[in-house]
Amino acid sequence: MTEIIPAQTGSDYLLIETLADTIWREHYPSIISIKQINYMLKKFNSASAIENQIKEGFLFFYIIYDNIPVGYLSIKIETDYLFLSKFYVLKDFRGKGIGRYAFNFICELAVKFDLSSISLNVNKYNIDSIRAYEKLGFQKVRAMVTDIGKGFIMDDYEMEKTF
Image 1 (cartoon, helix red, strand yellow):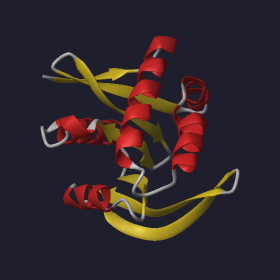
Image 2 (cartoon, rainbow, N blue to C red):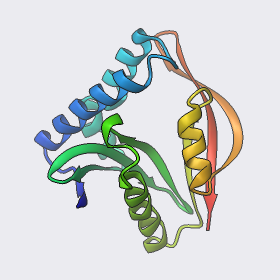
Image 3 (spheres, helix red, strand yellow):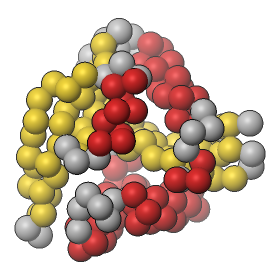
Image 4 (cartoon, rainbow, N blue to C red):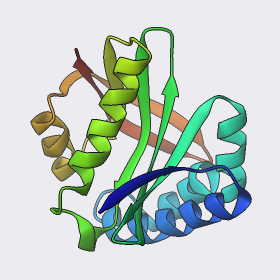
């Protein structure tokens, strides 16, 4: 059974930080440098960064599968779209329908708030994730390069799914 739980406490944020550390280190070394992984984990996925993002209006959730924490996601409700900031599942739990379940949850939120689309950014070289998003109905909108500090950039596609 899969559950999506709102992250509301410091221990929830630490759980997400731990999940992020594992997922990023298993997924991203072939895409970005270890230095950039370390930087982005601290800047965007640490418990303190999560707490700050929540203050900025982001909502964080962790995903439980058979009583095991297996992933997390973060969204922000904008004026007319839902921004999907983070969507990660542990490698060993991919292909079990967890991502589809979580994505349905995200779509339900977009509909609940009467939003016309879901938008996300994905690294241009994250081919597996791009394919997964395309299967879910996302299309590439534009290429973008974002300076994230300390000499690092995010080289992404913005993707969008409209309703």
